[in-house]
Length: 337
Image (cartoon, rainbow, N blue to C red; front, side):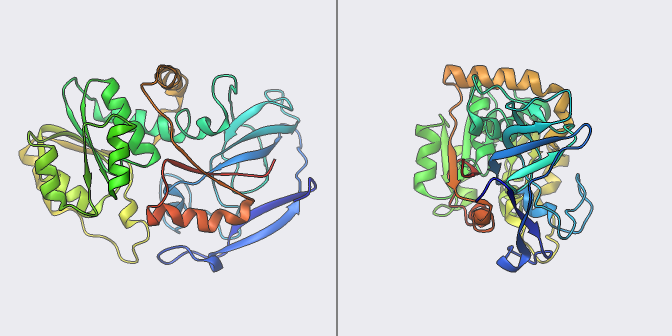
């Protein structure tokens, strides 16, 4: 890579099922020059998230679908290299929606300055970024935990799920995680302080829930959907809160999935199921980041990164790791310095 080339991954076609190589184009463009009010950022780390799969589809969602031939949308952190925006100066570290590319040009509206003396770049894509903020918003704003609640988390070894479990422990809850494989389940307990774990690959989920949640579930934080959501709904308590964060088991489905049959328990147990998007709480992010930084500094929250190193061309294969379940912690790409 040379300094005068902006390498980009652009969407070539709408994926059917899992994205494949022909769904992407690698494009080399010139490094952008800022116009009035604009900022150019050199991306240092690129966030790789399950939500990306939904952004590729041509259907209405909380953000517009990614146009064909557009740079793949992604959260990023990096350094301002040139600016004609009075809010940002060259050399400042920022987080934003920089996309899967080496350099990003924008008007600065989606940029947030980040303090590298408080935490290094990767943490601003993790505990102080999308993972920690999503966990905080979903659990505390939507789930409304109370001391002594039993909190069940699916996708618990992932970046969001692991933060949910740790924040729940801070709030005095009993936390149970669902993950795939004995290594991940042991890590939930030994590293992240979960009270119990269910290995869905080697234990019947319903039996695992009976074992780990004998008194039912007060909050279910769902990252998976499908059969996992249905099994959790079967054991919710009166007044339970079901927080819908994601449905990774369904993102690559080629047919519209059916709803969970056990949804009727929401009626009899006077419970609620609510989805959320962490962007909706943006005005509260500074206060949330302050809490998250304090919990991280005290050791109450531990951060786990899975960093792939390489240029933007490794993105298509790195994304697939999410759907194979072989990532451990927050998945991101570190671009060459």
